[in-house]
Length: 340
Image 1 (cartoon, helix red, strand yellow):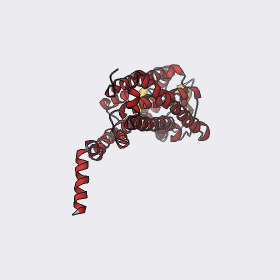
Image 2 (tube, one colour):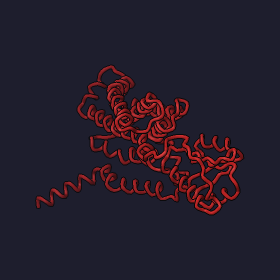
Image 3 (cartoon, helix red, strand yellow):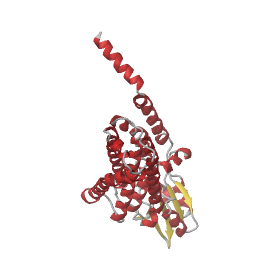
Image 4 (cartoon, one colour):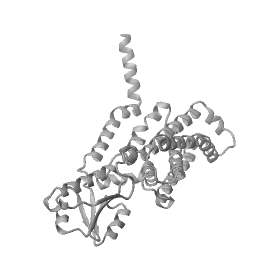
């Protein structure tokens, strides 16, 4: 009888907690559906730009698994490669064949090399041996080097989000926020003060993660460390403002964790950790709503492609915009405590 009473109490407690029920039943279905749309597509063949190839070689290459895009000149193909419209350029200039790989994604580079190797096994192309060069990256670059920049941003974002959400929630549940809001301090001053206090630790964390990955683990790095720190700082600032914002809608630390499947997991899928080539166009548009997408693109641009500030200006602006938006929403959310 006592066991039955305890069982019924737990059952009724769960039935009253809709967030826990959603985490238990809805979140797995949501994540599995997302995985289906991201990984269930047919994928995309490597895209190779060609210029000046003999007809026999071009025909043999078309018979491989690659998507061939012919260009009038090697310069035009190189321009498309610089704009990341191609995975490689196979051209013949002054009678010398050259294969130039974009190189920032090892899996795409391997697919290009496989297609060229398949082409070379045909009778028409057995003597066709192009020189191989890399625009970015290096031969034999590991998957860790390719996805490591995104992982730096992801871990910084994830842990700062949890820190900010739990710490700001504790300020509310212990009554500290209520006592603070009873003073003449204004809402925007509260937000700036908390962001400044938490932000110091976020800066240290982001710098530690980036420097450890680059200098201790030897992650491939071709750009400026200061740009890496800038992007990571903006990414953690976005996580900080988002975490404090969502804490206003949570009543316990467990409810902060319940935001992870909705806020963090989708961003991991759209951040660049997983190939997005086979994703449908309508789903791909959701990447522009994900702060981690911009952070991952900027970090990979600097670390792998050696881009300067001009090359990541859009991503930096987007992260700054997310931070300002979430900070402004934090000010509005504090109306729950007191209208000033």
